[in-house]
Image 1 (cartoon, rainbow, N blue to C red):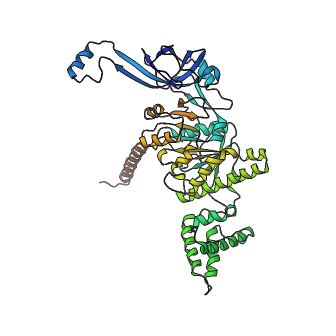
Image 2 (spheres, one colour):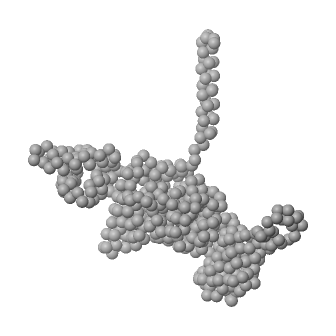
Image 3 (cartoon, rainbow, N blue to C red):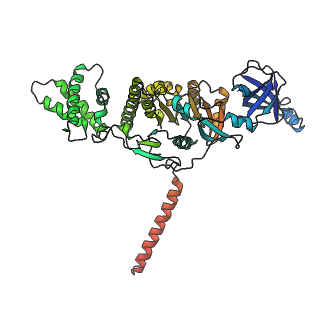
Length: 500
């Protein structure tokens, strides 16, 4: 079906067309010229009328012209060139001739475009529900992904669909679950393995503990006393002498015994004070009776670290500890040249509330290790997925390392600008579509997809928490229950012979 004709100057990357019927933004078209069949996407549409142009300022004149019903309306649009269908979607070397017809892409062409070797089915095309959208799994796992949307646009449903599809390949997924949405989830393709937010201090290095206690980089004397207490507490832990789970308390007691010496340095007390301040924050973080937290990861499971009951400081410690250890473990395997071990250690990390864990204008340990994994992880089999409803507050460096994006509805201009600056393939015309997306609709782009795509994300078929609460229904039912309880009490009183 012909949807338009090329007009004006054409280029290798876009053409302008005129049409006598209204196509839809996001539809795929083909342009045949010079022996090529070029695929394109309609990115922009405008309607106009030559008689009712903006230079007419007389309201009555405009009213009279509009009543004449002169058919001077026109439809003009812009097509972004995506590549030659018959040449692996390589961009053509010559532009289309003005006057060339533009046809709606047929289903056979689109089915081929959205086929994949290791498919992840996200949904269907927004404008053609009979065309399934499959993306390639490996680029997601190795080149990272961002899922971005305003609140209520369908972000959590998208994450759930993605997790379920990856579980079909037995990929070990690790979710940093900030709100407890996934700990009780049920996935058709796999199970959930809930991991407690605890760390065995045996697996923490000196610099991690030092950061917790806020010993400054230039506090050399404090660091010396702190290291001495750390080494002694670690030794006690290894020898079974540590009778408490509170590792910081053990260190505090070691320093306290030294501070009782009349010749002791007052700076020992300064270290003790810092440890005491940290104990209130991290007293429930340590557990010497568990193994390395990475050993709890199960292949083919959605491994969920439930962070819903911890504050941001503890969440940051856990994220940095897990990412650091995972990256180091994979580097060790790579150094040994053991490819099987390296692949066995592969993990796909999903970080909910990425704007908290990797803030744009604030430093944190979790942000530093998220940046490290974003830059280096692909070489060592570690994938990263940043999920956020506030893209503008997500660290730009980390976001720019996400070579794939699923962007649902975004209305705020600053969010749009921040995302566009982090993605080379997100054009201004696609950005302009973000506010008009319906719930569950998304722009998908990056290495996982052959072409930018407008997708209607499938509805997750399993079960999870995290949907909006029905507050009105709750209080309606609660009020009704209260009324019934009052009537019941009144009836009981009357039955007992009392009268009002």
